[in-house]
Figure (cartoon, rainbow, N blue to C red):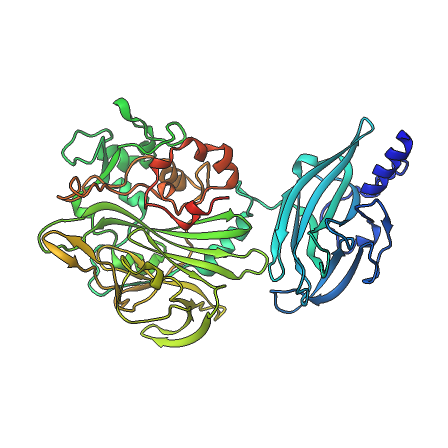
Length: 563
């Protein structure tokens, strides 16, 4: 009885204990090309022929060229249809000795026309025999519905040198009807460099940051320009709080010589100024000298084209989140009765959510005074329009809320969302890939349009005092070579380490009404809810040690939609 049970388990995973491993070779290993060498079985342990017949109710696998739902063109795919039963599955078992330093990668989805499927679960497993016991390790699972595509990426480096089998499995749901599940380019390949250890290769992060780098349009009369964050530190001193007259914790001459000294403070009960030693938001404040509040010159900004702009690419669920963080030394609402709301150190941001399988945009986010203006490209009624603007032809996406009339974002955020968003053409590819950002004069909110939208604020002395122009009729910058910050636990440069590890605030001056309205100067990007941490860090790393009350902006799509 034991021998029969053991034989069934061997058959189920397709491993014959009497046959040595068939493959021990370097990557890449094209699993579509090697599908005929794999062992194909279903959940009942029945061996299946390869290629199989699409009329085989036991399940089938085959290679063909066809269209994938949600993707343009025809593709060579590995189709794997589970057994025609509730919760049935099919799996291909690829025996090999795992090469060193490799990953598995594939795009998954459905053949076009699979309408009626209730979805499937794609799964990648590693199978081994140890001490006559079968060990199956699930490495990745992904549930998909028709019309969706997904990206599976698995780091296999821990299995280097081990003999076993990589298993590609597809599970049916309550029904297997039209479960035309396909794998596009399933491959075992050399692990690409991923210095920030977030699961996205550095080269892919660079590609995304360059492809979508923002086209920034400033309003006429903008006098408070962006600056490099390290330039800002070099022209500042560190205070123990938001008091410009307080004694220094670190003097300006020290920071001028070595900006990294910003992370060495350990003042009284504030503790360390380094987030890796003190995982909270502290009361330290960077106090820039007033003569430098206006930022760097327009000549530098338009020549370098990346002054005060920083990138961050991180996996979120099954997508890439591509973020651009914009830094300004000073914020001035130009309030007629005094410096209401003025403050030093301003971090603004724009974000794009992208499908790794197709490269298509899912959502964009423009931050306007902490409010997220979201455009969802998958809602009903989205249309594309090439329009003429003062900077030439651009591509405008219009949603169901499209309206260019006057709109107060503070009171009508829902109308601002799914309204419209614009993209500027790349000078090399001519593709409309660069997200457009209209910067509000003096207070630097990032609008998706030059339409007469505003952000009203109610002040006792001036009710409904309006925000300023974001007409984009001043300087413009098509950004390039934007520095990639990487992750907080694994920054990609020394400058990035200083920016991401500093746990205090980026300004000391905060206006005459700060205490009255309970406001403070902004913290760094990692303390905004829009900064998405890698899942592993969120669950068990540095992020888990930081209290939620350390974060600002009053919430985010990513806060309310966690992993």
